[in-house]
Each structure stands twice: as C-alpha cells, then as structure tokens.
Length: 476
Image (cartoon, rainbow, N blue to C red; front, side):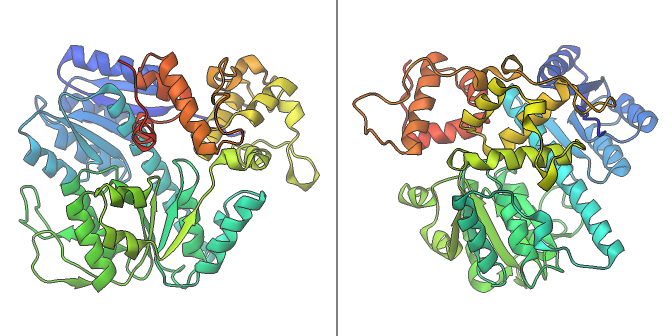
C-alpha cells in the first residue's frame, strides 16, 4: 500500500511571534511544520535531517542569511523550492535569491492565504519536476520514446472525446496551440499529450506557470540573462526557450502576463528569436509553443488587458477543455485513476473499481451530483483525502465505507435556495448557474471571499477572476 504523507515545510524567521504565527497558519492548512529561529539553525537541521521539499525563510537572518539557507536546501535537493520573505527596499537582495534558485519572493506585509497559495504552487511544481526526472530516467533506461497514451487524458464522454480527437489531430503539426479551460481541467496533461504525439517528442517538454512569477523573474526565466544585467546576475543564465530547443515549451496561464512580457512573446512567435535580459543580439530558438489560460482572452483583448496581435498569434488552433460538470459520466473513470495511482489493489474485470464497496449509496450520489468547480484537480484531492481518512490506503489493505458524513460540507450539503430565479431562462447555461451559485455563496458568507473560495473549493485567485468575469456585485 502507498502511504500518503503531509506536505513538509521548514519555516525560518528570527522573530518568535512571526514564526509562531506562520507555524499555526501552515499547520491549519495541513502542512507538516518544522521551525528554525536563525539561518545557522535551519542549515544545521537540514544537515541532520536531510532534504525538504519546501523552505520559507526570511532573507534577513542573524548569522547565515536566507540565501545561505536557500543554497543548503538546494544543494541537498536541486528540486527543493524556497520562498523568501523580504522587507520593502530589499528587492535587489530578493532578486539575488531568485538568481540562486528561489521559487519566489514575497514582500512584507503579505497576506496569509497568498503565502499558503504560493507554498502549494511551489509543492505542485516540485512534485511535477520530480515526476519529470523520474520519467526521463525511465525513458532513458528503456531506450525508447514515451507514447502519448502514457499521458492520455482520462474520459469517455462524448464531449471529452471530441476534444481529445482534436488534440490527436494537431499533435503532429508545428502549429501553436492555445488550450483554454477552467483551473483544474487538465490543460497541462493535454499539452504533454500533444507534445508526445509530435515530431518533437524526443526533445524536452518545458512547462512554466506564467502567473506564478513576478515580471522581472519571469522575463529572466523565459529568455535568460547575461552576467551583470541586474544586481545579483553573477553569471549568464539560459532561458527556458533555449532549454526547450528541439522540443516544446508550455506557457501556462499566459493570460496573466504583463504587457512588456507579451511584447517579448510576440517577437518569439513572429521572429523565432529571443533577446536575453541585458543582451543586445537576438538568439534564434527552435521550439514549438503551446499556451494555456483560464481567462477569456477575447474579452481581455476588448478590455485592453491582452495584446490583440499576440492573441491572434497564439490562437492558431484553439482547444477548449470542458469542465468536469459537463462530463459527470467521467467521474467513475477518474475515481479508478485515483485508486490506481494510490496503490489501491481491488479491481473488477475490465479495470473498474467496486465503488459500492468503498462508498455508501448516499456518499456516491453526492459525489456524482456535485458540480466540482475545481474540476479534476479538486476531485482528485477530495478522493485521496477520503481514502486516507477512511483507512483504505494504510497497511491493512482495507478500510471502512465512506458515508455521506465523511464528505466535505460543500459536497454533502445541497443549497437550500434556488441558484437561478424562477423568472430566469428555464434552460440556463452552466455559466449562468455558476454565476448564480457564486453570488449565493458570497451572500451567505456576507462577502467574505476567503470563506466563499473555501466553500466553492477553488483558490481565492480563481474566485477573484470569476467575480470579475461575471461582474458580480458584492453587497457591503
């Protein structure tokens, strides 16, 4: 049986009150927390206990500073993610930390949930990079190129099959593809599927979340920089467009890029060349570009938040990935996938799992009827949590049935008010229903967006985008 483990984080700060507050915050959010009051103490702990996936450290520390902690963490695990916390006016110091491999820097004063969200994004990237390294090693060991079927997105519904067919048809081409869909629908999985079905499958697949990095760092990550181009640039650095040579670069959340970055991306698409930060001569690149967004880019163009010429360059082949609520018949298949990935052994002929052995009738009906605003990602997280808490993934090899009371409140409790008024269109669209549901949840939480996002099962940043998209007015 595969045992699940909590996300580990090492918190480092020389102010006891701050360290205690951070410790409580991350423990409440399900993290396994270790603390250190100084850089030397943190480094000593790392040397004694070995690598950790995530470190959150203040830059200014007595003794060895946050950069020293960063170097030790990444020396033990090159994939380790380090978030540095910096005071106002320390931007150059923070950029130096990023040049040494920090995942992100966060300025004081920071919002607690934004820090937790950054931590989760860092751990997601760590897990993804770790998986990439493992798959790359396996591929080299077997002396073969991976098949697209190895990353085949899961679904049997007609709406999903139509999208998969389009992805299969466009894979061999060199055309730019724009993947659109809500958060958690599996846009990166589709991008990998397209890459492995292309003539560039032997080359690298390089993903980057454009919304996860501040503009200066994103520019350096994408295009590289030359030594001395900014404070802390102590050596030349290749950008991801160069790293992806001969393969595919996946620009996730491209709708979150700033106008200056959009100008540079337009040049790459038009001229097939980049200019590293601080350089004067262009560098040719040989790479296929796949992009993804959960925003309505046409609307962003109308609002002058996204360049029209870049949109047309990206939108050569658009693929819209359906949300999970539009393909509920795929939920059993996704459940089977989660069970297989978790090491659950019991299966029926044909590979289908016995859901009635694991779930009571009431709990399975609730799971099937829930509209999953966080899509496949939310479904996977909820199912894994339920399996762990019910004992299905421990060493005993069995667990108790999961009943309705075990489900998160947002899933087991049906709304006690209509989502759409009786005067509304008798056949409203899913967007209309979603808008009405978000409005109802915000009203119930008296405009508390953090609580509303928790109930909806989505990140606060996603909720903000939906409020803006639907022009939802919040009563004060």
